[in-house]
Image (cartoon, rainbow, N blue to C red; front, side):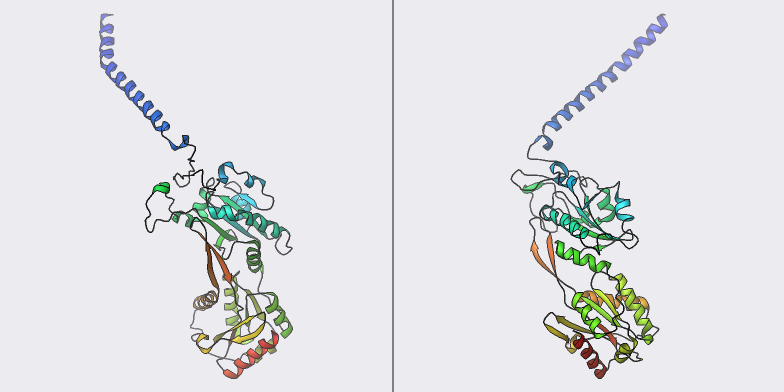
Length: 379
């Protein structure tokens, strides 16, 4: 008994300082937690913590910005647009953009002034889609709240991470290169893949026109001047190719361009062999002629300096180089103008389209004039 008593006393002498130190450290830790919570901005009515990418965002009572992620119920009342999250993203976007369908997804920061001003556009656009026969069964309009489903913008809209969300607030000094705004991005999904960011002004009319171009296939059967005229009248902007049997290579390249550049313009092909033979002959070199037109004037050829002459189109020229050249040329004909900066330093675009007609033909003045005359009569 004396032996066990001695051992117990030795243990108490050894562990008592350790136990006291542990209790002291625990008390200090609790005190630090209480102090930090007392000064935390969570308890300040002028602050609201929004955890995106690990940043805290300051909200001032004087600002007219409301956080839809917390105290706005409009997202729950969507009737036409779809609220996309991590649970339904695969069903709505990945699978929903297959089998000839497309999905328009807007990734928005709840503090974005652009989104606050334009959020009604997406519901109105979705309603217009449901009322348009050519779109209603083929287009879905979706919205992703980046404040909640943070994985989706990181995975499918990584450009949003390039916006440096400065948590220091209004008192921070301005530094060049330190972007500080809350982003909004709209992307088009086709076959489960994000194809591109949607260009143009954010309004229902522009988006509907863009969606129609996206779903419009290459139009064949332009075998009369009347059909060509109707095509030019109803589908703008447009690119028209004319390919006789001897131009099978160029026809294939034109199809590749129309597929990879879909949505930029409408594409048409003159399929009448006799008409095409009048515009073409066997050739080694081709040139692309741009015919510009508007509602009140007939087509006119650009000046000689604006005529783009392509390099030799023999078999040695790769199909990839051809496609890339034609895509680049068409993109250069598309003009976008910045029309307004929003309060959070993002911008809106307005598209300015011109009629675009592309002819692949011999570099021969008489045949060129004949081709221009055909399209002038068609217009």
